[in-house]
Image (spheres, rainbow, N blue to C red):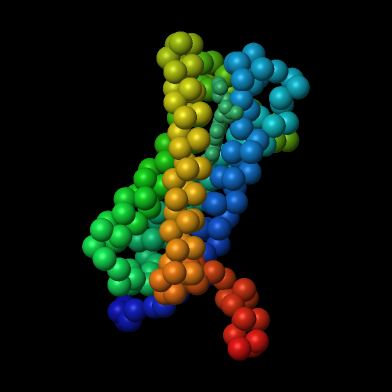
Length: 189
Ligand code: HEM
């Protein structure tokens, strides 16, 4: 394969990135909080089903993303001080781990507690694991902490992207923006 460097992420990589960001945000907003009785009450059915469905889509997207990265060509890292490059790697690595850990702790926690996954359109996936309600409740609690953490880490990642764009004035943020967003800007210049 020809090994030339690219300036921007491909359209599919951009789609996976922004779709993941939007789904995580909506899943967070619809996070079913409160006691176990409340979370699994009929009144919370829609919120919980939407939350679980979006969360499973996030898991599918991140798995596809990891596979896609193996074949895709990505832009070279920007020319920044060593500490900044390391910090970026650390934050992106943490995000990747959390994108797997958040849905996986939710699924295992719910199952060990003895609850099926309850998805939109009335789809239910019954527990596949042995039951230990107290252990499941601890894993579900870890899920809620990790769910909050991912928002903070994603926020840091977003601030770094904006810093690159407005202060360092390099092409890091633009390399992840779709072409159609940039076309109008170029014409106006
Ligand atoms: C990346 C996706 C996800 C994010 C960001 C996320 C985030 C959260 C957050 C922040 C809470 C706590 C809500 C609050 O305290 O108000 C929560 C609770 C919960 N989430 Fe998720 N979640 C995700 C994926 C999932 C998935 C895939 C499932 C199930 C398959 C799920 C099931 C639940 C359940 C059942 C609760 C209530 C836990 C309890 O208190 O027992 N979540 N989630």
